[in-house]
Image 1 (cartoon, one colour):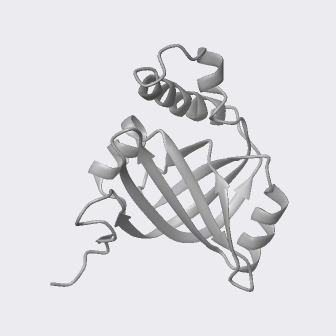
Image 2 (cartoon, rainbow, N blue to C red):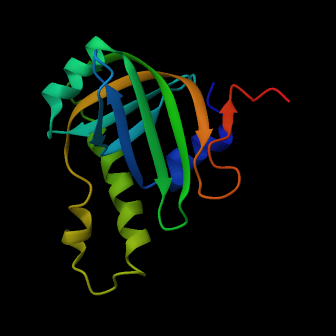
Length: 160
């Protein structure tokens, strides 16, 4: 189960994400993420992916099934990685656009102090419109924030 602190991080603060997958031959491949949503039971995350390379994403998920989602709050660089297993994928639903809009607003807000003169449309364009939703079961969570604890597994907890 995803701890409540990390659910809040994903729902309220995180503004950048990247998905990593591997195909049947274990060749890695990365993909931008437009948005994400934690399930009510806090066991799965649905990621919303833009068009680029979607055929390869679906093929790799069907072959290997593993997915790693790295999510960050920029500019603090508080970062977590969620590793798990692909459950299903689907086309977009009506409320998926709202999820992406929330991420886009958080991203623009975080960038505005750094780039005060950049037009808002340019900043908004960083978060691409999604075209596919992928749900995966979260099996492990790692702290990836730069610093001495980076790489520490949070879920399941490391044995002492």
